[in-house]
Image 1 (cartoon, helix red, strand yellow):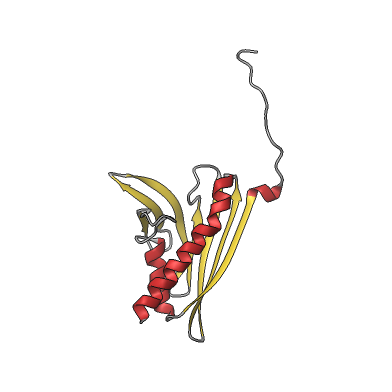
Image 2 (tube, one colour; image 1 turned 90 degrees about the horizontal axis):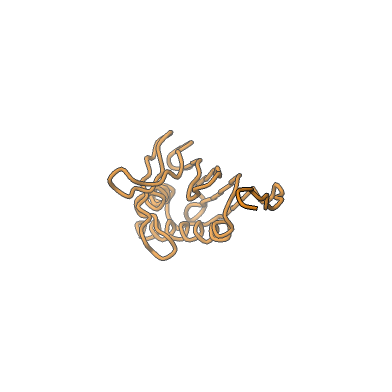
Length: 157
């Protein structure tokens, strides 16, 4: 019938609306160098899996923004810095890459351990998430942790 809406939907369960990614990596560098690498890789050195810059900006203070800067006042808000405790914690919350209803919490927790620094990373999210994002998010975070480790270890050597 012309002019009538059809209700076509899929019933979802709560697990469809949650995401938890937990990763750990050991860095053969001191905690200060590692935290500096976190700030660089989350911010201006951030890139996609193809090595292209995401043009990210990070205002590294409580209430600071994390966003993509396309220039001329254009961009995409990703998160707000919820907590920062140099050099042991960076925590942010916001929609991140999503242009749909999703809230995320991202934590980088650093601790000194024998021979370097341990990064415990956690991304939790609640809301709608497109399947392509759900499938790719762990690859993206793993790539970022690899870049953090490489940068910190290079600057230490």
